[in-house]
Amino acid sequence: MRGVRFILIAVILGFAGIAGAVGPMTLTRGGDLYSVAAVDNQVVVTARYADGTVEELYVPQSAAAVDDSLQVGVDPATGALYVLWQKKTDMEARLRLAGYLDGTWIGPMTFAGNDGTSATNPQMIIHRSVSTYDEATEDGGEPEEFEIATTFVHLAWWSRVSEDEIGAAQYMAVPLDEDGVPQFHDVVPIPLIDFLPYGIACFDIGPAENLKHPKLLMDPRSGNPAVFATDLNSCLFQIFELQPQVVEDSLTKRRRQIIILRSPSTVPLRPDLPLAATKIEVGSGLKLIMHWDGEEDLLNYLELDQEGLSETKSLPLGETLSHEQAVELIRDLTN
Image (cartoon, rainbow, N blue to C red; front, side):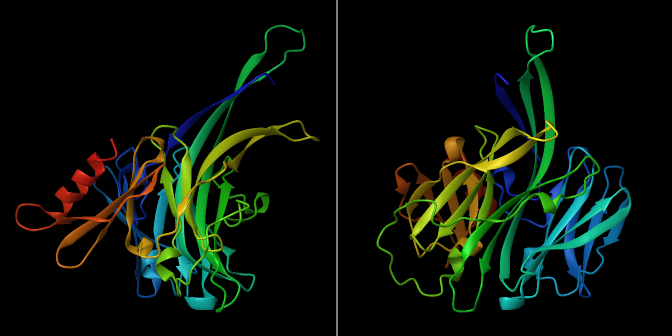
């Protein structure tokens, strides 16, 4: 193999623009709008199709779903629909994923929290990567170029093994097969802690519940997804770029794509940053602007770049500046 190149296709999910902020809605390129909610202790997807028809899809075995954990996405290759939610809370919390393929539900599959650990604050991005690679020909001529495409369900969450443990962010990239079925047996979760041999002097940050919310993002420059997570062992915020790589099976010689985590960019922890309520806008080179609703009609924001986190700034909301206008102004700062 002489070389590998990557073309990345971002899936439009129910997020705030390209930033990847979580939301319970998704809009497909064909104009179909899906929204998800818990109704009478069951997860229900409302499909508003481009032709104007509306359909309600009831997710099986979905009792005890946590309302603000619900997320929905679509695989552009198959049109399959995927619903993610957290079941129960505290040490009983677990994460489930269900798929709706050709009119039939598969799952739900419990992929985290079913081993005695607690799994909370899930995030999901569905992203299709297309890679090309060169392969030598039998006659010794010029190598031929081949293409391989895979849709991945990128998942991130917070995990704890006991009530007394502070826990750690976890990440997993689940490939979908050609029929849209998640291949959980091919992957294992990756703890996003202790990637660096050093940190900074940690301090007492208390329960730190606001910091236990990993975020999945899209980098508009590279087209790669990324994960923003807190390492509470090292007192650092980390940003990992998630990059596809083509590998060859040593037995079958078949090639497939996997996701690798590039070495993280890090900045010192800010214990006052309310990640639970924070939306993230992403600029070129993973320049981030985080914003959240403050007290007294303020929209607070700060910037994160290679120099670290800026001081918190605020925009006053009122008759002359609406919340939507303020968010658009903040998004403009990423350009």
